Length: 401
Image 1 (cartoon, rainbow, N blue to C red):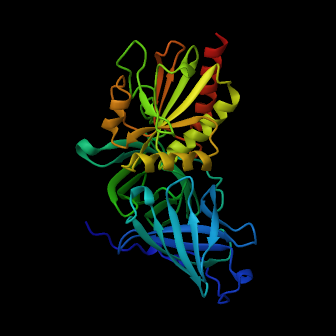
Image 2: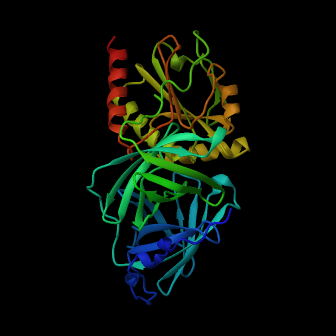
Image 3: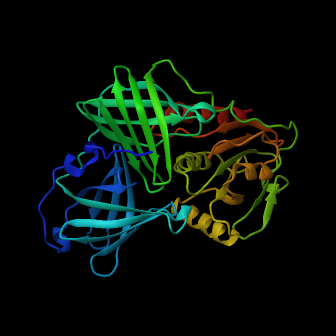
């Protein structure tokens, strides 16, 4: 499938500055660039560079989301950014107010690389849109491969912002633009590079194309529908057993643990099926950290089961340790195995299926399943606040009883 280069993706969207000095003090703060997903397609990115001594930082900006990472100066005009907690990095050179570099998503392998370029801009051009939210019913793919979603979209003049919810999680904080009948929405958060393009026709979006990095392309379409809802996330995955819920995991020292461990005795247990490469899992981890801080371990035990791209167990355990440190986790994270969802059932044989990272399992004091929550639509969505309130209410009601 061939896609023509879209003129509205060009960096001419932004006002470039003239700045040729290589002095650190003269390096601009704000930058606009693009990831080269293919010969024909680029994904716009905006970021901020701060080179203050002892406090160098690199800030990715996706609409309302601002992600801050450490910026390391290497030799000469070369810099690197570890996009923690993800196993991902940016490496670039800065010369004559131009940036040229590579994004390497190490989670997908050392050879997964996407080139990027950037130039300086006067300031962060992304502003918070105050427009009302438009709700679209979305279909990705066709036939047996089709899956439902919801697009939440704000539009102010030609500026766009919003997110896309699916039954496995949201597609992050999206920002974009509309020119004529053509729209684009984008996000780059260090784990994923998402680009959505489409044509607007009255209340519909047609001819949609979804790019994820340089490895995945899908089609999509949408229709304005304020009443459309996705399947209840607690109805998608079920337990096949009415007895003690079984699982087998490996701790960070390589030792096995299972449901018989004493730390699970006579307390409610929350198990998070996740991956260190997964932004929706990161959002859920932030939520579970708040839960861990609120409820003592003798009332609620929380653990994570990580499923990783690394095939070597030692490398996977090292990745888990780095993630736990980067996220400042206050609950334990264990290793489950590879990311193949069929393998997850080997670890959790009492689930009928696992369709999403993350998936959250809540057990009663007898180790029986109370609820399985599939996917995670986080703070970029309209339902996150209600989820937090309802989950806190559920845990409160269980513990008070």
